Structure formats: C-alpha cells, structure tokens
View 1 (cartoon, rainbow, N blue to C red):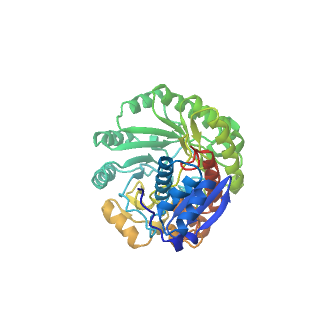
View 2 (cartoon, rainbow, N blue to C red; view 1 turned 90 degrees about the vertical axis):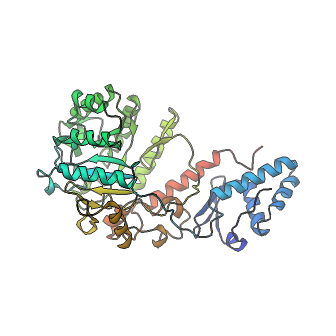
View 3 (cartoon, rainbow, N blue to C red; view 1 turned 135 degrees about the horizontal axis):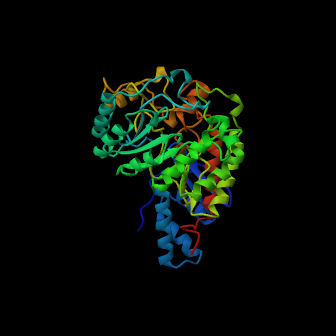
Length: 448
C-alpha cells in the first residue's frame, strides 16, 4: 500500500486553493508545497485532508467511480507520489544545503572596445586593467579545490582584448575545469576560432548581439559593430564551437527579437535573451521597457518557435528543452549568489555575483582569502537572503520555485537585498502561465 502523506490535515485545509486554467492550484507557502490538480485529483486531495491521511479511503473513492481495484491502487500511488514530489511531505521550509561554487565569473580584463550603455561595468573603469597571471593561477587552484565541477565563466570587459587570454584558457583546460566565454564577438577571427576548437573543456562561447540590422544593433553596440559580430559568429560556427547568442532586450530592439531568434536557430545556436536590468551604471533611460509587455512578446515568440522546433525559447530568457515544467522536489529559496555563484574582478576582488560588483558588497580578495572563507563570510554578513525573509515573497504560492528572484534587481531598484525582485510581477505571471500550461499534460490520476 502507498504511504500517507505526512502533512497534518489542519495544515492542508488552510491551503490557498484557486482555479487555474482548467484545474486547481493548491499551495502551502509555509512548506513550499504547490500542486496543479485536475478535478478528480482535487477531490482526492480534499478527501485525503479530511481523512487524516488515510489512503484506503482514496482507493475506495476511486472504486466508487468504477475503477477496478488494481487501477484504483495504481492511481492512489501515483497521486501520493505527485504530492510528495510537489512538497506536501515537508514539515518546514529550509533551503537545501547546496554544494558551494557551481559557477565563477572571472573578469580577466576591464578593457572593452565597445561602450554599451547598460553594461554593469562602469565606463570610468575601462583603463588598462588586466588580470595578472598570479591572480588567475590562484583562482584556478582555489576553484578546483573548492569544487572541481565548477564552471569558470571568462568575461570582461572584452576578454579577447587581453594578450594573456590563451595562456589562461590553456591553464583551465590543463586543470580539467569546464569554462565558457562571454564576448562581444567583434575580435573573433578564424584563427581564434580554430584555437578555441582545440580546447576539450570549453562548453560554449556566448556572443552579445542586440539587433539583426546595423541600425538596431548600433543603438547600443556602436556603429559598424554588427559586421564584425556576424563575422565572429560565423567563424565560431564554422569550427563547430557550441554557441549562444545573447541580446539584451530594450525598447528599441524588441521588434527584431524574432529575427534574431530565427537566425540563432538557423546556425544551431542557443538563443539566450537577457532582461535589461537596472544598474548603478545605466547611461540610457530611453532604453527601458515595460517588463510585462516584453514578457508577453517573448511568450508569443516562444509559442511560435515551439511549434516549429523541438527547442523552446523561454520568456525567462534561456533556451530550454521542450517540456512543461513541474513542481520541484527540492525548494529553491535562495539566489545562488555568494554560494553557488561568485564573481571575481580583474584584481582578485570577489563579489556575490557579476551584477552585484558594488564596493559595499565586496566579500574579500582571492589573493588574501580562501573561497570557502569568502562564502562563509557572506553567510555571516547576511548577504544571502532567503525568500522566506522577504515580506512579499514568504506568503507567495511560488516561494519555493522563484526563490525571491534576482537580488541585483532588488538591490538596484529598492536599495536593499531584502526586497523582492523588481520583476516580481512578471515572474508571478510567468509561473502562473506555466502552471496553466500544465493543464495540457496527461494527469496521473484523472486519465486512464
């Protein structure tokens, strides 16, 4: 016999229950439980909550609906498994003890040949500031000691401006550390692409491109940059290097996103648009966009492309496999910053993430502090904020899926890491739409 869920009936009856598409969305933010249930499943849930978790009543109910005993038993087991997966067996909501350092952004230079107005690096810091070899070697050793499965994300500035870049990539490859590269693509030649192709541990190269036409791309990336970017993209593609195209969505390029996405698909690249996030260094307020309008446009684009290809381009901004998201067994209550993710500046200074490189948030320096010491120090300084500590988040049905969103969005919009993401309403709408989409998935209980 399947085992009963552990949630006390009193807690179950206190859940938020609301219609969602053709089904019902049931939640308990205090334990992060969340389920989308069809009509028959909803009846089972109510019966379970009223019967102190006695599963035999579920089977008898299903038999009364003319299911045979074997089918009733199987449906009951599947239903309880679903509730367990969706978090109803939790008694408290605590963040999982995740292994530290999944990714480290490493800015090997602050120099850049472009001046994108929304860049999170300040314009005034674009002098000749390259990372020294000793600093990079220390980073490599520390990362491998902390977590040999960590991925190093090489960034800048423009990383291909520093003459040491291939020395650094050689070291990463020899150390068997996975790495990717974020670049504006303007400096990538066939010779550079050929060298990159030789690396065994290179996972992908992400190229920033903000328009498919010169006039649109030039708004943020400067006149004459598009032909260079496209030449770099084609060089990478010709050598079979895994590639991602990453436009930053703003008010003056939204109309070209579909053409950019189709271009990415045509060359076998991932399409990874980014939201235009407010930062301390933004130079062009006219680029700001209505976030909900941008979400709706990307959702429609996602649906159109999903009908044509097996890769779905999510409104949240990342290219994801074509499947409907489900409730997660382990809750996400924290942004990964300052634990699973850190950012290291050219001089070894360490910050919670690449979007939070503010002086007041500096966590230490890699030449002075060990990474584990830095991560532990961030915990002590309460830099990491759980969604259960954010007033708007702790009672939200999606608390264990969203985790409070982006801390950089909160910090630069509201001046506090303890506030909700400034895109909170968009995230809420996105999760709601995803759960409505789950209505189209076969029910584990309500179908034969």
